[in-house]
Image (cartoon, rainbow, N blue to C red; front, top):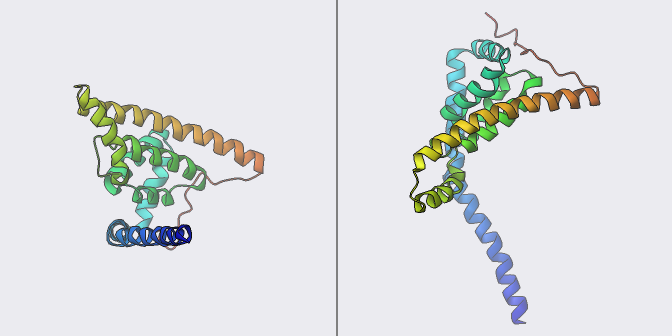
Length: 187
């Protein structure tokens, strides 16, 4: 009988912990992401979606802008997960590659820009603690991690382009390489 009681208590404890985690998200990350989403949409409305679409179209012509500059700026300005929303302005063909680059950048920048991905800061802090115990410079490691990350994220974006081309051809799908500008927004 004790086993059944302990099992039932443990089972209910699982749901109580899940509820506490859910409430912590509702008072922590969810309002922040919601406010960032509102701010980003307000900024886009102020600038004009047509101008944002033109900037996105211009960035698709250059892989350095597409997989290095745009993901860096998006992650730095919006953080994770909001940086992913900038992909909505890219052509369908480049969206998987942009997603790969920005997702990786949100991790490789944590040492020097912890605001980008605070949910995974514990990973960086664990590494930094080991570096500190060795008497080495944490900032030097953070900058190296950032620089190597920029190069590798760029390569990851480009490799994803090749993968997208291969899968598109294999599946007989043609993805657009131009931004579908909404004619209602054109001035």
